[in-house]
Amino acid sequence: MTEISDYLIPCIVVLMVFHGAFKGVDIFSEFIAGAKNGFKIVLNIAPSLIALILAIDMLKASGGLQVLCGILSPVAKLLGIPDDVIPLTILSPISGSGSLGMYESILKDNGPDSFIGRCASVMMGSTETTFYTMTVYYGSVGIKKTRHTLPSALCADFTSFILSPKIVKIFFK
Image (cartoon, rainbow, N blue to C red; front, side):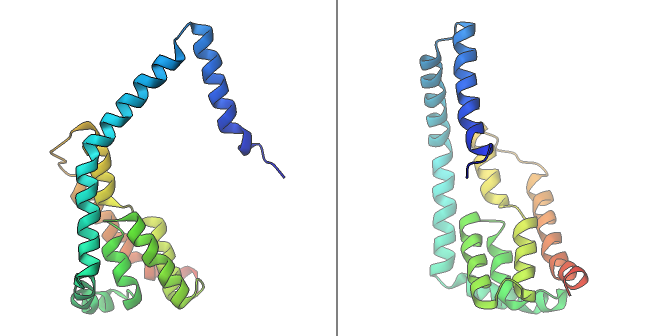
């Protein structure tokens, strides 16, 4: 059964083409100009993204993620964060795909309705891939000085990490 949402994007595209034709705009050349601009942005962002992905893969492959988890384990216990969720707290500000893979592993190992699974779910829903987002958005427009963005975003992520187990205990027990 088809939904109205299945037709929404194609309808918007058709409306834009008709609107451009009605206004006398050369739609194809505008499309090509936009594609060229998009390609330039990709080329500007690519080195930062490659470095970020490489750093994450090196962290996982070298065993550094396990070392960081071991170091953070006493603090996590004090805050009520389950040990199985610590890798997610490390990866989620850095990598969306890395944290999603870790999240899937947590759900597979512990179940989605377990305390650990629910903590991981709340964390995934309330955090942002801070470094990736800053790399893409600031890198695409050439901003070098991010001022208060990084400390504010990491503070929000840290708040989520601390409050996720508490929220799960309050609302889901």
